[in-house]
Amino acid sequence: MCGICGKLNFDSQEPVDPRLLARMGARLQHRGPDGGGEYLRGPVGLGHRRLSIIDLATGDQPMSNEDGTIWVVYNGEIYNFPELRAELLAAGHRFKSATDTEVILHLYEEVGVRSVERLRGMFAFALWDERKQLLLLARDRVGIKPLYYIQTDRALLFASEVKSLLVDPTVRPGIDPGAIDRFLTYYYLPGSETLWKGIYKLDPGHYLTVQQGRLEAKAYWDLHFETQTRKPLFAEAVAELKGLLARTVKDHLISDVPVGVLLSGGVDSTGVLRYAVEQSDRPVHTFTIGFDGEDFADERPFARLAARRFGTNHREITMTSDAFRDFLPRYVWHMEEPVCEPPAVALYFVARLARETQVKVLLSGEGGDEAFGGYQTYRNFLFLESLKSRFGPLKGLLRPALRGLGSVGVRRLGKFADLVPLTLGQYYLSRTTTPTTGFNALKPLLYTKDFAGVLARETMGALPTRRLFDRVRDQSLLNQMLYVDTKSWLPDDLLVKADKMTMATSVELRVPWLDFQVLEFAAALPQEFKVSGWKTKRILKAALQDVVPPEIIHRKKTGLPVPYERWLRSELRDFVHDTLLGRESRLYDYFHRPAVQRLLERYQAGEGLAKEVFCLIVLQLWFGQFRG
Image (cartoon, rainbow, N blue to C red; front, side, top):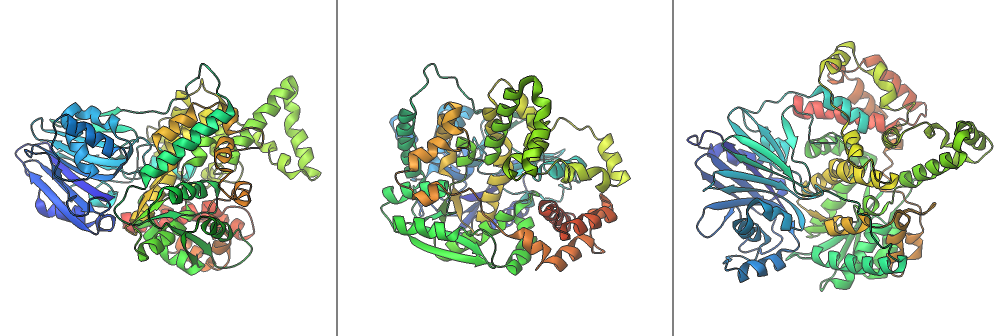
């Protein structure tokens, strides 16, 4: 796990300034505190910061092939590198290290840019082919590792984090007003755009070539939901899944340093732990976090239960409201992209705990919900659509019927009433914001006339998720939701959080359930193997039920329950007020101050607007960090 950066000048006679490359690398030191390296020749400069995980003695980067005509800087882990290395040795290639980095070089020598299709793992890399004067940038299939780039009039720059790009004095991007609007639509930024004009994320499953000043991006992978000619038996599919999960976790344990597991007390992380303990020849460390105070869900008892069951070296940390508040400016600095993810703050503290105990690698259960249908929203929408079809021509009566049930005490059904008229795309957005109180309802009151006018004049394309839904419109409702989450919510919210917060502490986070082989296996399963009635993640729970304690298998899903809603309303009330209503706030270049003040009053009065308040805090802190 590392940080990479670099610059390619389009004028082949213009060298890259070595001082600039050094400053770009210095901005990434937290990603790689164990060493750094640079390659400068002609119009190209490649920079690298190393977090030593595999081949601690000879794995330094940038790394070249035998004759020094191909150079690479790379961030990530290639889990099938032993098999690829054996193939390349048989083909006559010679290796000078035992790293997965060198496999990328020789595989490129063998098959060119198509080499990226053979890699299984999490990665972002930049490869310079001196003979062809070609720069290749590539990102893993799911977007576990980030890679940003910007094209100026004279050069292309890339880096693992945006702050490294901003070091270059020629990079002075403005703010994209449409991105502010999209952030308040999704509560994160889906798609390739960032909040900076001209700075883009390389899309997951894509590579980008730069040659003679021309940029060309191509997709090399997508998630396909295949129709099987023979529907498998559920028991057969469970057995196959067990074997796949065991192999996947074993591959993710490859490391020359201690490995730990991030325990949330849920099914996914406990399943990862079970296979890690079974297949590791070293003690496994586990880490979890709790929160100061009472009257909120506590994951620690379930994490302790799992740690005892599998005999791990277990450690915990407790986060306070003061620690949450004090870290928020650094949260925004490390995240770079505005994301409404309070659990990301907790992730930083638990990753820091791991680092303090000399654990550099953590495994997480991230991705099980997107692969196997774990979110209650999947189940709820399928249930609602089933009701609509049963009511048939009388479905106009469904909404008042559900409201009636809610008024007589059946709260679960009453909550569905407002969702009845929504399309799938509208329902997708309603997961983060309610149709009547969230930002999508508040925007007309919140935006200033000037900002609304700018948005009206901007060329606003279709919402990113709408384009994704269009790709899979012929699929079942569940598969449509799984596809869109895998292509947007996962890389642009959950995985950017996972990468940025763990790398801020110089810890590598691995996500076995997001191995593309696991995703493709899950995509080929019948819908009822994943969501059936009120059951979610049906096949994954069946595969783990013999080894995961029943108290965890059958518990209600809670996520990482950071009590930020209570904190922002009580202990941190003054902080919220000063941040959002202070004289120096930059929010009011875009929003009406009275509208923001009214939102805070409604929140303090008990309305469920915690996400909206947190989003505005993040945005204000972002303006302070990156706009000045």
